[in-house]
Length: 130
View 1 (cartoon, rainbow, N blue to C red):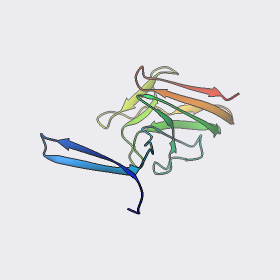
View 2: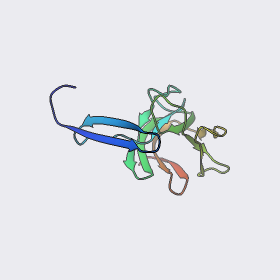
View 3: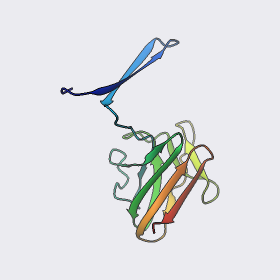
View 4: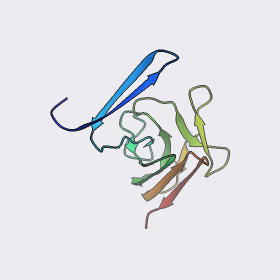
């Protein structure tokens, strides 16, 4: 670490007797949702996924998308948990690592889009930006 002001988070699991120490620059928020896929600039590289903004299960990003598809991950460099399309368009599905990966969400036309993900009610939207 270089000199500066930092936020520290210590997570202790008394059952397993393990701990995790997270350190980040003061006031910096870690995104909890990232977008990737051949329909966006990140491609399918899970280490280059695009950070979405938001907290508490509601996330958004405005991005230029191209014809292809997208999915969402919660941790850079890890494929699970992975979110994608559920049974119907607009319905979000997840593989937490114990199931089958959900289908990718289709991007049907190039353009600028506002993409939202809500893990509270398991929905998503992909709407042309105005």
